[in-house]
Length: 398
Image (cartoon, rainbow, N blue to C red):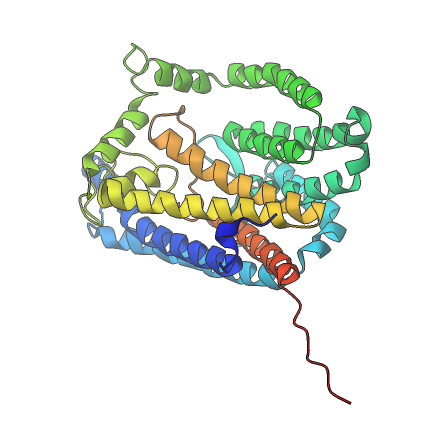
């Protein structure tokens, strides 16, 4: 079923334009927000009497160049998948999923895995660091769409239809939680759950799986006490003992509130100078709100909303189940990534490090998002080609 609003709209082109607009906004935002690193280095230099280059543009340019490199790689990947028949991904779905799982496990190999801030989530390859959990999202989406398509007739049976996907999704979640990266594992589970829901899995089975996952989530919180502190800081922001855990959230809200209706102006953020940590990655939306203000930040939110609506529309009009579920998973990945990041920055969810798709600095997230948008564009192109009315050639008179 095609929505009347989109009958005269070139949906693949609209998706491409929105992606380019968000990517351009992200590059500008990374350049502006990365000056926070200069403020950090400046404070460290003053406290330890070491030499320091006081030009913040040096740090901002360095991060901009890195982000431009990943944007170029991601654009090439987007162009490839936009022209690559998405149906051929079914043939390689198992190997894509297996490669992603091996990469998630490889972070524990000495000399290959890279550790930062007490977490071992990255692979060090050729001077670049890649985060396998980001690639695992897209890899599992492709495989789960294939699995649900193949087992659609047995989907009402738990052991024949749901159990294989639950085992594979659970294995990914356990490996990612152990890195530790609870946020990515949680998003991954939500994506799979949403694909199961659209794949017509029984509500009884979905409810049972959700209840069974509660003890595992509680255990993950117990194993890492800092997660409990973040939740307590979220529930009781002014309680004693929550000073350290709630600091980031308070600074984020200060940044958002300081922006007002029209913002302080591009490059004029105050909170990015070491007051708000991760201002160029996980909390870049707070810096954007501070510099751009409410009204211009609303345009950014509307662009995300339009892209998500177009993704849902593509999923609804796709004729084959594999393509429909693939578009559903990709749209869910974008929706959850954007909404959870914004909710954390605005204090609607406990603090968790998740990037804002197409906006935050980070090569893995950017490449995966652009690759998924290329697949979505390819699905839309092929479905709209099928919807176009056939042109009848006039018969020649004999």
